[in-house]
Amino acid sequence: MLESRGGRASADRVWNYWLGGKDHYHADRDLAAALDAVEPALARAAREQRAFLGRALDRLAGPDGMRQFLDVSVGLPAPGATHTIVQRRAPGARVVYAGSDPVVLSHARALLTAGPGPVAVACGDVADPAGLLAEAGRLLDLDRPVALVLGSVLEHVPDDERARTVVEELVRALAPGSHVVLAHLAADARGTADRIARRWNDAARPGLVPRCVRRVRHLFNGLDVLDPGIVPCAEWRAPRTRRSAAVVTRLCGVGRVI
Image (cartoon, rainbow, N blue to C red; front, side):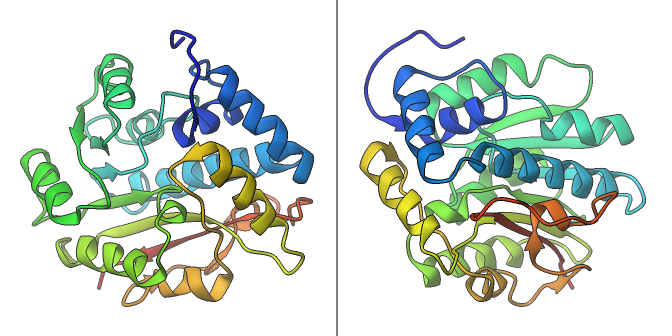
């Protein structure tokens, strides 16, 4: 567990709390409680996103035969980490986690690289795609297909055009047959997600921007989006198709580089 301290809440630590991890402070738990007052199912939506990532990664490492994975949403260690899912299917698959928070990277190096499979941690940020790709290129063969995991990072990029550019720059460096796995907080007609974002932005960094289906779909421009398209996380190839009971959901999709 992280040493207790004050200060602002952090996206990585709030997610760690939602996912049942142990690395969070009072400020993070207080923010989670405040958000819960706006939408009680937010933690469940986070777990639904984690389950979506698990299904997508299992398919990519299994039937689709992917053997290189770049997870740019490293976060603090919590159940269901990318390498545990991927290497259960393909023990020799290489997984690289990337992030920019020194504390998160330190924890990731200590805890995520302790297993037998090939796992590495790199310093890289979607705010600097070229730098991120340079780091990834030292650890992965970018001339071969890579599964790029953008868990919830783009909802912290405030400008739509910048978010699209980030994806385009990253995809441009990937070989055909690569895949992009993406999830994003969904805007809703009632404005609940906007109220969540206001509370979040008052208390945490980086800031949060919900986007509607159309705006999330634009992040997949130029990619071949796999069925069932851009849908709530609970509905993406789930064993039993169901709708989330949450007013606010998390959208997701998987796109193939062509």
